[in-house]
Length: 421
Ligand SMILES: *[C@@H]1O[C@H](CO)[C@@H](O)[C@H](O)[C@H]1NC(C)=O
Ligand SMILES: *[C@@H]1O[C@H](CO)[C@@H](O)[C@H](O)[C@H]1NC(C)=O
Ligand SMILES: *[C@@H]1O[C@H](CO)[C@@H](O)[C@H](O)[C@H]1NC(C)=O
Image (cartoon, rainbow, N blue to C red; front, top):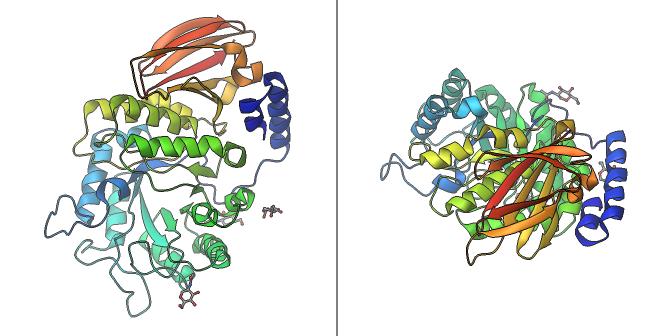
């Protein structure tokens, strides 16, 4: 509401609305799932976008989903500094399972892909100071056709806990009704709690629900640590662009609920793969930080350029993503091919992103007034401005009536941080 107002209408009135909403929220913040986890957006690696599941291990052992692949990624997460900047969760997606349950009804891993078992892999991952994520589905089958958890929620939660799993991505394929979908997501949440193990719970509940019904995010946040809203990402600018457009068009419904314990999930970071130009990689990193998104990379840590690695490990961008205030950013204007986004940070600071959405020509100048930011409070009476992306640069001391000019490449982003003085 507040956010939408400032996009469309009179700025000062919208600013007042933002303030009122902020006060209301401070008085009664949306209640999060009480497992003490995901106080900031989770960070890690997830196999899906880069490794999918069609590759057979006898055909291409280096590219297939297997315990070897996850052990290699675990090693690299430590040796290449990923863990130390915050990427902690190493997550398995679909296709880890054998085609049927065991005699006791328990899920079991594919014996060719995970011959040592998931508990062994979890031990290995833990020995590296990392955490292990796994995947299951609320319905009768996973999206790729492996056994679903319907009818087995308690047993599957206990199985994952007994293996030492730390995160569950729970998909929503093959579920017949909205009632079963909602009941399934809630039952699994309670079942995870009952195991007594701390397990981050990632849901796709609103994604499958919204086709037929408006999701109730207040309720979803009571059961899930983060949740997907929109289609799977793929390795292309078109996909990243669709995620950003969907998010800004729906920001009135999804922004305010995000906070410590519960986050909107715009899906994986595809930086370091094949489909995004350098500027588009910068845009994904900057905007995932603005959106307080889980930072789950899907790439091959064995083959990644030093530039993509430096971008994914940029400490100033990660600090924005992980800001302790836990407020999700939003778009404040979209005009002349530019988008202006802001995100309130702790200590009265703001992150500002200027995206050049033009896909023709060269770098374009965007000029804006600091008085527009933070409902007039971001630089009042004065602030220091730091450019973080595409390169680190000090833009000096500014005041409330200053205009800033930035040069932004087509499909690129300039990310700034203001600190009020
Ligand atoms: C289970 O939920 C209760 C609150 O309902 C919470 O206090 C407790 O920490 C939770 N346990 C786990 C393991 O998530
Ligand atoms: C699973 O399949 C059974 C039998 O067809 C059906 O009754 C049940 O509703 C299905 N469960 C879900 C979650 O769709
Ligand atoms: C959404 O869920 C919350 C918490 O369960 C509930 O209090 C509220 O009434 C629900 N809102 C709607 C519109 O159903």
